[in-house]
Amino acid sequence: MPVTSLINDQQKANPPCLVCKAQANKPRLELANSQEILEESDSSNQRVVQALYEALSSRDVATVHKLVAPDLEWWFHGPPTHQYLMRLLTGASSDTSSGGRNNLKNKRQDSCFRFAPKTIVSFGPTVLAEGFDHARSIAWVHAWTVTNGVITQIREYFNTSLTVTRFGDSTATVTNSDPSSPATSDYESASPPSRSSSSTAEITPLHCPYLWESSGSDCVKKSMPGLVLAI
Image 1 (cartoon, one colour):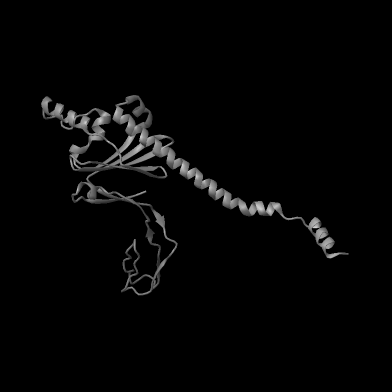
Image 2 (cartoon, one colour; image 1 turned 180 degrees about the horizontal axis):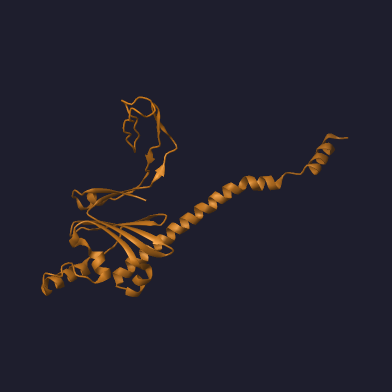
């Protein structure tokens, strides 16, 4: 029998395993699809936050109510006089004990403050926005939490240098065989084990990868306290 005929007969008897090839490509396709879903979710959350800033700028109360949960969780770090966003949303005065003239002045200052973000980035449900008011030497950062298209939490930072990290566990372990010389890592400092403990202690360091850092201190040319937000 000719060799070519023998090869053709073998190929007919043992056709290529198309199912095996499809299964081999399946994990890669699932990974790509998951990445697309995450990117679409990030983009959707950014659009929600951008829509809120536009509604605040145009004083569109109805849209603000649609985008913000009624039980919004609020965190603020900065001078109390800079709580422009809270007073803008609630209509409260910054000083109710100073008389009508001061209240009117505060309301005018609040109405003049514009939240126009220069940067908006997102990491899952967390959306970060940063802006500046050079006339007042103010830098601000908002860390919004978006859940199912609705803003449920706001962390507000005024004149504060913010670094954002993500919680995660390192796969590496630190083995300490000398109680007098505790092992350390970039994110964790180990204390010497007690003398009653084993001579070898396994420690899982906390790994917090860097995600984002504000640039407010450079833009307003002033020193600021620093905080770390872990998400």
